Length: 156
Image (cartoon, rainbow, N blue to C red):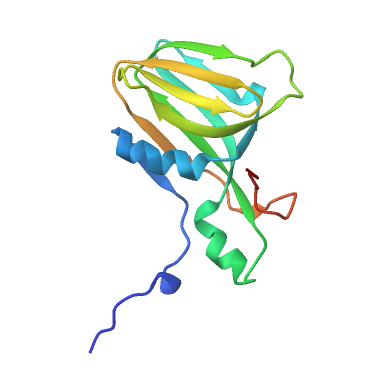
């Protein structure tokens, strides 16, 4: 006799996700919420039409284990890569300030269907003009305990 698998019996694995439409992008955006990264960890490769960020992503998917007291809240380094990028613009981002740490609030696709918008805390934003929506999120390190030891909070 076989038993159904439970979520708890699954092994933790690094995330590898691709968003090809706005529905997929909503999930990816939720997983990237509150990611932090230095301004120096952005790179646009115009010839390859690729834009990438190395982010320290809060592991929202791990909150149930943290709430059960299994361990403290965690972060993991991840690459957020956007394909088919033809133009990049920013607002409120000083790339020359190497000490600046940016916080990613959301990733969305505009209604016109031609630009990906990365909203940052403090009125910052990145706008990526794209030919077609293709965004990948891939964890590249093992999780580590969040320095604050706390879950990000957004009081209303």
